[in-house]
Length: 261
Image (tube, rainbow, N blue to C red; front, side, top):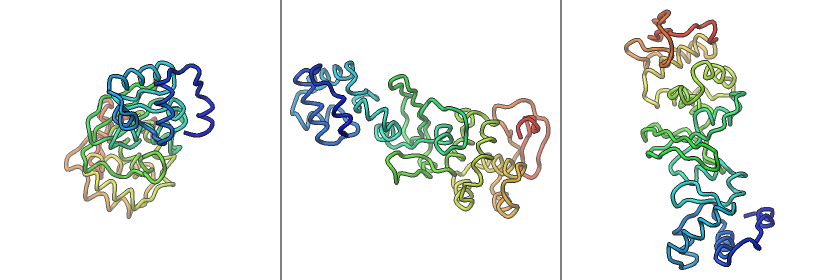
């Protein structure tokens, strides 16, 4: 914990147990913690620890993220992404939240969206919704953990978002993000991710969009065509009635393209 956080603690409002827990955790430089960490430091029984954490949470010194997982109040607000990905493992920030993180959208995304290989219920932490989507292990890739927070890289954030359009603002918002961000992408990495994701419908959709938006060159598009859907699929899984068909990508066009583009 940094010195500013240290100054923010009003020890006059704390019991002896509460002050001891905060001091002990601070000395260990723990970002997230629970009963076991405090038990190892204090030797207390679990009931005493639970009661102390509950009291510290009510007084605003710690934040309960999920069952038996807490962080310091200041850490939650100063290092939100880092705290959440440390508390929910394995996970990385993705979907609309990652698109916003990378500057691909002008929309204010108020929730935190995670991808994990495990099933977790959504969380609500200090009125901040944390939405967790479950991916197959073979699709859990393309994230950057070199910094403190674990976030999908630019290419993977676009792949994940196309796969889950309903959690990424819908097709119209996705098209805006694709246009805003495409020139920043590594095309070779994007093509690798598209194939590795192993979803032919997704290949057809992104190939069609890159083609009609004139974002990728023909050589790149030709490399994708061997992996498109074998049958016609809807451009927008949540769209309206079919208006046209595109044979190059096996796409049923069920959106007004003039409005979309």
